Amino acid sequence: MNIRFKITLLFTLLVIGILSLISYSVYYFAERSRQEVFRQRLRAGANNRANLFAILGDNKIDVLQKIDSSSTTQVGQRGLVIYENDQAAYEFYGKDVKRLVITPQMIADVKVNKVRFIKDGDADLYIAYQDYNNKKLIVFYMGVDEDGKRRIADLKGILLSSLLAGVIITIIVGYIFSTQLVRPINRIIKEVNEVSFNNLSERIYGGDGQDELSRLANTFNNLLNRLQESISIQKRFISNASHELSTPLTSISSQLQVTLYKERSTEEYHTVLYSIQEDVEQMRQLTKSLLEIAKTGYEGGIELTEVRIDEIMLKITGDVKKINAAYNVELEFGEFPDDDKSCLTYGNPDLLYSAIKNITENACKYSEDKHAFLSLTFSNKEIICEIKNNGKVIAPEEIESIFHPFYRGTTSAETKGFGLGLALSQRIVALHKGRVKVQSDKVNGTVFTITFPSLNTY
Image (cartoon, rainbow, N blue to C red; front, side, top):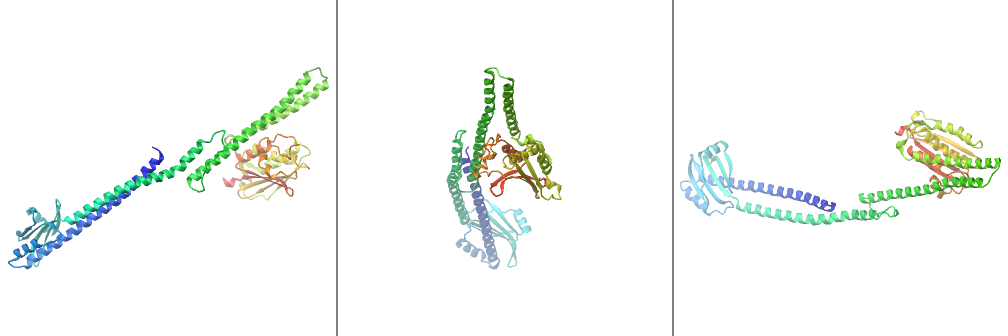
């Protein structure tokens, strides 16, 4: 059963339940009201006849017979019996009305209870034992509420017809409503089926609303955007990695072929071997960087401990100098907070060291004076590390791309490198729930701002 029929069925059952409850309640209370009104009529009629019986003299039987025979009361199929001194003193029965069977037990019960109402088939029987004009009388007054029952029967028919009409209308409206509700879902299913690996540019129309279906479509579109971007990065990464790996291999192969073509002097062999060694070292560094990026591909593969970023930055200051004697790093700390947790973050010290060192090394490498400026500040919930240099300005359209593997900006084309350092740093920072922001202009230079959550946020 599809969702359209499920919605229609559920909607119909709900309305049927509500209408049935309302109809039953109307019928129940109408029937109770009819019974109560009719009993009041029986009580009034019985008291009226008993009072006349007590007031009238010797000809009371004839007078009561005339009154009852000519009465046009709404009580149908009437029967009246008045007992005096435990003997039937007066009886009246309408046409085709069966006689009352009065037992001694009924008389004994009414003397105890004073007033009783008894159901006798379609008829209601009112029995009363009380004083009427200083006479103790027992009155039996029977009747059928023909008019009231006819009205209740009409009401019952109206309620059943209304219930049936309501069910039919509910089914029609529910089907139309469910069709309208499911239509955008069917459209989404159709559009999703049109999306394939070779056609990831297709998107689902989410509409202008803010309902759940629009949010679902937008969420799926966001997923497609991330998937398309991931596949694009993967293709570019494979293409660039293949190119970067093939370049030193081609160089090594070419040098070996030329060298083996004829006998060479020892000095020539040394020159070729040194060149091959440089190519092998380049391949080693490239392979190491690729493996480091692969290792940072998932959070579950790293062990997290409490790390002080200031200690890592102190170590980087000296280690960058060892890479190149021309590199110079200035380090500045902001005011340290009283709470040690504000200085600590959860992370892997080796990966954090690698992330910050890569950016610092790049800052020195691409700065005209080989100078980088590091600063560390603290807030209640974040640790903020800034790395600044005065190198060439990065174009705004290139800022997002510099974190892609193997990307080489226009300002770094002449500098040796693979374009993997920033990509690796961003992945490491993201694994530690941090973020990297880049600003570059002629006034302030290029500033990389790395923000990590402190222990206070956990």
